[in-house]
Image 1 (cartoon, rainbow, N blue to C red):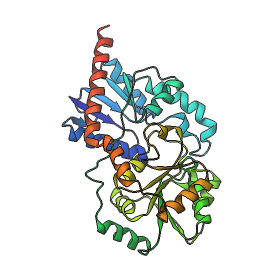
Image 2: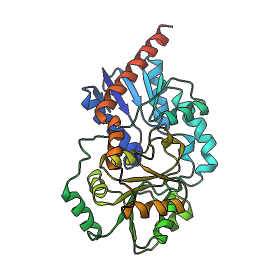
Image 3: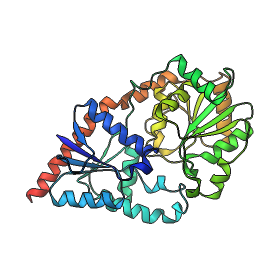
Image 4: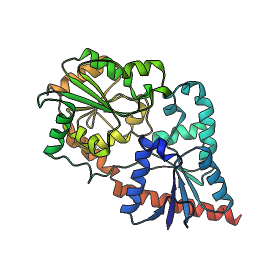
Length: 339
């Protein structure tokens, strides 16, 4: 079996969670010994499409006319499109119709979680949907003492500083406004946010928040996976106040790095993350109390429990799950072609 992994506009998406998910697919297939290509001119047995732009849709249509099995990856939903870019809420109904139209051009659809599957089914996706985690390379996310030192030296933190980190694009959905407000109320702790988005693409309130000047707040921008790994190792808490996700790869990374995690209590995390794995809050007041309890050592760190949870999403296991979906798509395509 040889797979075409097709992703349109990588120069725009490679710094996002989608870009990270595509990289994970390549790793998963490599671990499983499955041949893949990113070139449409190569030979292949099926196509795995990760983007919903026009060229991606046209490719799906062309492949189906030729009888080539199409796997469409449902990375996005209307829910996680809202509260992101300028005018995203206004356009979200149109976005939902567009992605449903795109996804229904696959023989099958992959999405990261059962939660995302339900959302897509409710939105009108009629093709078989298979939940397959984006996965995490556990062998890569291993700590050593140098990581903590490198991180703290680079950003000017002392060994005694208590550092709370988060990761995400500069969008409201990620909880950026709450992160800034909590930093204002907790000057005794250091807060650092990793991730980037051109501020011309976001509402004024987000631009203003990113430009907030506080002695205990840093917007570090986009960093390489190596630098981000050092941040996980060197921080005291991973705080993920996102309002909506289809999975949240950075949370998996933090858990794999044995970092204590504090997340927002939202529906997606009701299914597989419980209070024995991570801490959950709903309001800024709850977050502040939990941060204090974790940093002061009044609450257990939960690092081993979260690691056990994320081990189920090891990239080596994800490869075999992808192969099973590819085979299902091939069987469905053959039956359709025979008709």
